[in-house]
Image 1 (tube, rainbow, N blue to C red):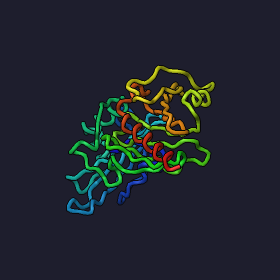
Image 2: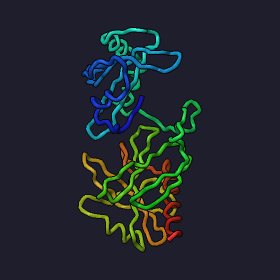
Image 3: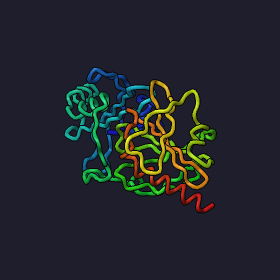
Image 4: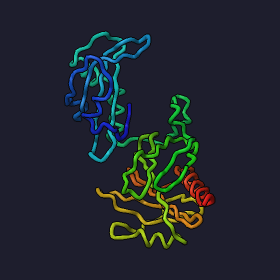
Length: 270
């Protein structure tokens, strides 16, 4: 199971990516009262499991949201027809439960990297260094139980960097990061406020030294709250992109501290 924004594109493109042998073309299938893009064939495990029938399914709830991608392997069968694969997938209580949790937004607090059942890849450990090129920061990410990825290749005209939370994948969370030359937070708030911003109550559990900034309208009724901190001759501005909207920043205190320390070290070097 994968949930996220895939480089390949939408669900139809996503299911083309796995290296299935003897694959049949992408098709639309109705499963659990929803329209999926599916593709089947055989998967070579490269070990004692050998080559088994496999099905890849993908769906996206909205054009702007993350896609859900499911891999289903039929380990007890050497051969299965397309109709048999789809029928067996339809009957799977696990696949159905995963889909319903994604579709209905049913999730709870989770710290994947601290769960002994989760195998953490070398490039996905929580504590590691990432570079935010627009802000010019080298950030030592914290061991906060999450997996953050610096968004690669930001657009040349972008003014901010982004950290996307890879795990847990729900709820969808990104952190927007920018630094602005200023002598105070109120000066920056005046600079960045405009017709698409508003003043909201401060998010709960904002760490000491941080001040609430304006919230920005992103479309579809979504608002991005911000928090600001003066460090040296710059103000660090952090926005919280999440569905649903962030109202409590306590889970993100470690990453806020890491961003602040990165700016502090950058200011010290200059």
